[in-house]
Length: 421
Image (cartoon, rainbow, N blue to C red):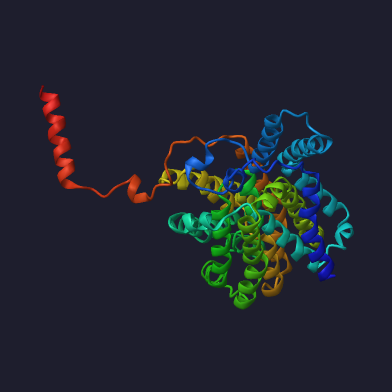
């Protein structure tokens, strides 16, 4: 089963490239295809097109330069690109549709075993990895303030927000414990796809996901103990190994392919959003199918705080970075990363370490609203272009420099002279 899953994962991108028309050797590979969705600097976002649009444009330009009428392969590929753009835009609709099927007929996803679940998650990360380069990570690592800000939002703001919302809605102790657990877990891998769709910084999103996932080893137990008085043991070694296998390894393979086989990547890039959407929908549906009954039995008093947790979390995750000097692209990325929690992991922890069955229900409900909120943010931002102001994200000190008494005194004197004149 594992071999079949791996073979399928490797063959899908290759098959997709068969529909791409050949490009004359004299046409240079468009470097923006590899970097459009992931750079945090404004110059990278000079246009509002994604790599999917850029690839289509470069292929169309090649055909125009040759002065030849498009062949059947080119027409098929252009039709695919347009269809893929529409399908990606309808990501929230597919999320709702797959969730509805999983709730109506949970057995429909019995075939999606753990091996397939892991394979789909790896496919999602691989589809993001081939759009990245080592330079993207170097640039993000040189300005770690974004990662630190999002880490504080994930493990500072979200747990407190979950506690406040749970108490405000009058949840019983078991449901309240489950709510706090959802707020205290790491960011989900699906946030990387939503960041890509939203034209955010994919490299930054991956680093944030990795940081919060590894941070869950010590932050989740500390928060649960501090806010609930409950001890939630976490398998530190297991989390670290899963992060390497499912997140970092596919990303590394994708970046390596991007570096050494750029022409192949240029043909594959248009299908990566589709692979990501399909993988995410299957992951959400599989998780929902396993806990369909608790989700259906959850009342409106639980639905409302869970919705608000993800929605308010996303809004604060956007506004706070903007107010403290971060750029538009980084702020979008942090908003999606903050809003989209790893709800399936929360369900597993509640199942293993919380005695009351009701404590699992908030995580089950969160699976649905987390995916829907993140996908909606992604699609809305996809059609709001990023202004090119030529600035990289500023640090807090750069936006609000320390008080300088001498400068302040000189400005006061200048003001008084102008007023006197």
